[in-house]
Length: 117
Image (cartoon, rainbow, N blue to C red; front, side):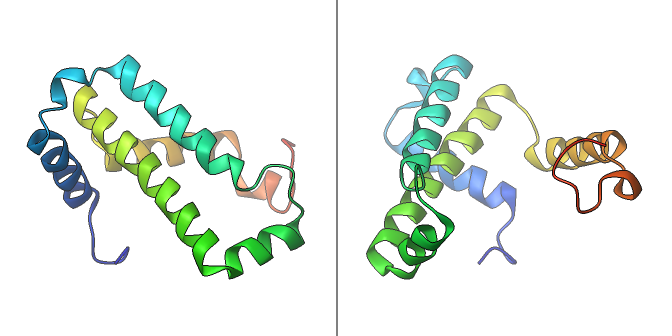
């Protein structure tokens, strides 16, 4: 689905979900940012203190992978609702940030390195 679903489609679906429940009145940049961090922390809980081997086993378990998938969905929903609330085009923000980060970390200086040159 990733190859055929646009950010706009995700945003419209998230907003429709919100609007059907009349939750928009509770959505402001601060509260949506808080929600985003909480959901990201819930995602992190699945990986915290685990080795690469344990993570691999976790992702091989369909139930655990489903729980991780649910948390990722929560993170994405919070982010698209925040982008709608702030009137920020996610695709534009993403590509601008990639360009900016690319200038900060040029390939020829950082390729294969884990730290800034």
